[in-house]
Image 1 (cartoon, one colour):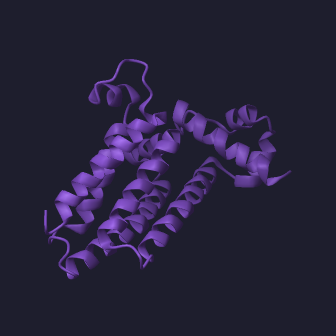
Image 2 (spheres, rainbow, N blue to C red):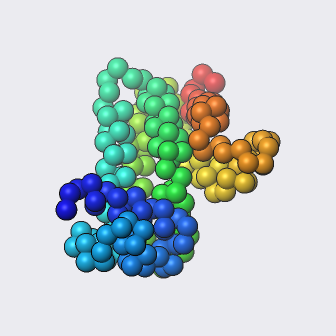
Length: 207
């Protein structure tokens, strides 16, 4: 079968994991929804855990490539790199709220040690990029002497809060019931602007 079928299985997995949870989703559920047989799911992935790891690696590889591209761009100042990271994180996470929700379900429950460790490792690699940029800014004295690691926690924590619940997010931003913030361009731009303002105020020495 083609790689397209593998991609379909992975997309269905994100949908079902978000809806029913990891434990509540069976390989048979995945096969039925993806319109393939169980043997094909096992052929491509071997197990649910391996399927989740494949999803994680696919998403992480894309983001890591984008972060490395930003960090290595000599035309960008440190604060411009931070701005670009904010735009990348918000755009990426808002474009895949179901996968983001699945990740955080796993992080909160922590029931599968290997899977939990893999998720943390991926986040660790990505946060290292921002940490390095902030340390460079501090060294050049354009940034205040802040805590680089917790700066990433501040950034991701704000994004996580608005992604926690569509209903909660809608209430926080004072919009009417039924509004979908995750597909609204104006909200995405509002969130990006807010996070940039936080980072500029927090990091820049001249603020």
